[in-house]
Length: 271
Image (cartoon, rainbow, N blue to C red; front, side, top):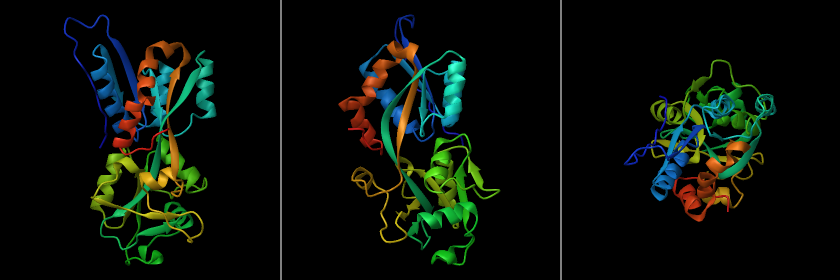
């Protein structure tokens, strides 16, 4: 299921003087950018902002092609992406809009409530195949992942799997909402999502990065106090030459009002 949001506001008397912006990229950031855009347009009645997903890689490609004014990424821009932009004579600016705790989720009936980083690595590389190996029921583990264009896919691989390869044939989902839906409907499932997407249909696991000595549940409070180990920045990238056009929206996101929306949407503020 492809999640995409289109936000539009009609301006009475025509659109000749409307400041239109397009934001594209990270699926994780969709609910945040959507809320920010809605609030920004209420405060700026002549503004038109569209927000769509497709993954962090898609966002950068749109910036390269000139079909987006702002790329939203759940991971840092890559070296080769910078080169692509440079080859086109483009330079970009990077803004950290918020932070996100990455939550590992399982079916609500799963007996397992906590896993170490090493166990997660074993699951997603295919070395651990049954929940009974982890203290759960005798049930096949069905791991769900984001697709390769996703920044969340890459962050999980780097931070949790320590750059090991995902198991061959892993179930790749085109959007975060699709992972939540699949995990909620599949008893043996496990997947990873941004904390803002976690709901009562799934169970979020506590995670240990010290070999099982300390397990911490994913929450905004634990992400803020530094005890939850899987936290990442969320970025906006835009062309330097477009700064005058996009700066009002960027400044709004970083303002007290914009950061209040960050917290309300389930992310962690930059301040």
